[in-house]
Length: 252
Image (cartoon, rainbow, N blue to C red; front, side, top):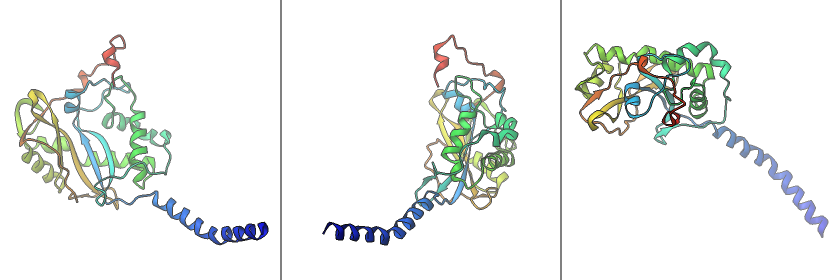
């Protein structure tokens, strides 16, 4: 009797094993989630440093310009970025040739002063690994997109420049950017001086097929802004190194 039960069990395992292998393969394929476009997210450091303590990166003075927060694969079906895919492990040596540009335009201003590597590693593991690009391609694509859109220059053409003397129209900001890039941006605000809103981030949508073509955003984020906002000044030369004698400077 026991022999017949064992024989039946072995037959069941042999019969089911091809299906188990197929299912396992399907699960592996599902690890790579499809996405519909990229969000290029550019942050204005003046707003960031107005609401958080900023420190000079150990790699030197960053640019007085919009910095890259990320290049995010985005799924319209799930209405959120696609994150934490299981592929392409982080390798810092792959971005060694991009180091100077990253230090200027994708720096980490958090305190204590740092070299930005942990920030890039987090960006890659969270978003980059889902992009379908290699490590070098991902960071190089983000840098090239930032340079091509040149938000600061587009705003300046319509006399929109960092100042606390007056507020700017969000509509005018969007028009200035759209005129330059050919598509409507999305503007995210944060609370600034006097409790008023300020320009914090600009979201630009990029085609997922080539990672280069700017497109109209398929979705609209529900960011909270007032009609008129501050464009808070920023001067990277005023950043200071971490003072380890002051416990406040150790807060991240």
